[in-house]
Image 1 (cartoon, rainbow, N blue to C red):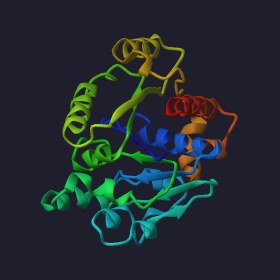
Image 2: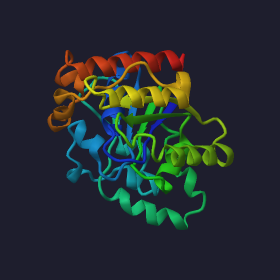
Image 3: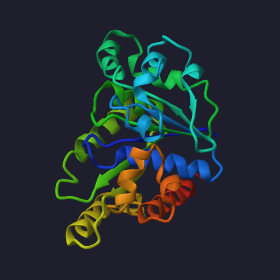
Length: 252
């Protein structure tokens, strides 16, 4: 059965794209046929998998607005069983253009129909606009990366309100897959406090795996590779491998 996971936090810089790329890669390495949808106009998931976003002729923007067939956008990545729907800055224009379209909230859901991948991961933009609504309307599950820092919980309430609105009005099957703590620093009590606070709010929806601050993890995108291919023995790689194991268990 196809499962669609939206990776979302409207705060930037929390490891959202890093999480989307590396969970997608480890799911592929676990034998799943995976599609990563770069739905963030910044296009970081695209460049993070080694694709030059300045040379994309047809991307998610064209697919969403019906300017090209969805299957023409697909790129096979260097990671076996991991495919990519790439994007670039043109997607930012879609936020404005979608306003006048009928059924605008369901355009991504409809565009993803032809794809037969077991798991589709959507890297959402760090905002709660129309693109994000599209991602949540298309998804079965929501994965929320939260940075282990002082303002971590700020804004989560707003995100959950949007989640509930979409669930009630557009997508009744939408559920929270879980919350993953990113940029965790075991040397500080603050990281542990944030983790504990999230467990109070989300209970067993908080994954046991925490993603550490890790140099190898931070440099992997500049090489156009997921951490599993850049340095599979690093702390960051081991953490994402563990997280992916937990996610697979949740999907069974």
